[in-house]
Length: 120
Image (cartoon, rainbow, N blue to C red; front, side, top):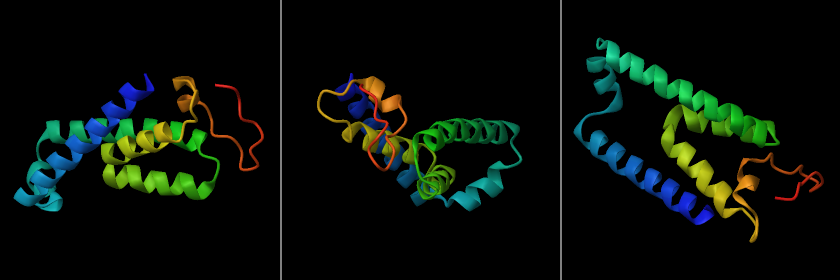
């Protein structure tokens, strides 16, 4: 399962980089927003995306132990969306110890002292 998730989030990251680069070469994000803002479906899709980013952030904030990490990931999610989400998951997946189960991915990170790590 861990190998599958690594592949999945690597694919998400690659796809988002590709489509973002292609879109950026065609038109800047601010110019596109100015043109698209009048469309109700654009606003609904944007709100849907940011509500999803907020939901993922709540989990990341619970999982991370420091305020600095929480702020950094909030900024990354707000600015980069699914690029940041895929990166977070890939970092977490590659930090799993050999033999850890996928359950460890969804557990709270251990405290800075190393105490409190639960068996995965």
